Length: 122
Image 1 (cartoon, helix red, strand yellow):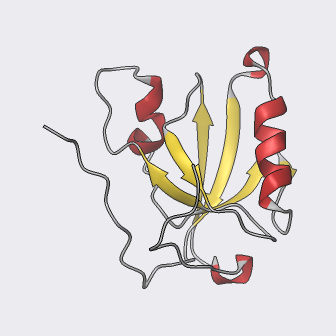
Image 2: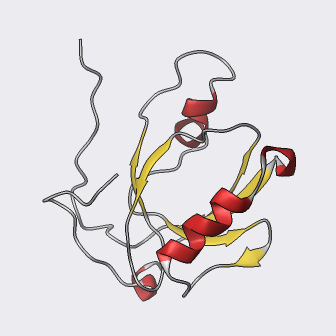
């Protein structure tokens, strides 16, 4: 998905908080959009619920992934400092046979930013 008017640019150095490791067992993970940054990929929007137990699109939400978290590693490969396009290519190249995929996120970037929340339309 393309950039939004409310998007703000952060640096990978802004991510100084705790890290969290998430293992995704199915695709899609539930992350709708990453930031297109030069030196990292940041989660911008996730699907804000899990519709049923085992819902693949609710994996990120169920694992506590939130907007503003920076991808640090994918299956043990350090991606910090890598262009977001390369990180997205790496995620795309991981075939369905490569599941599960383990991603480490770091929080802190955008911690003082009020992230828009996706809401369910009725």
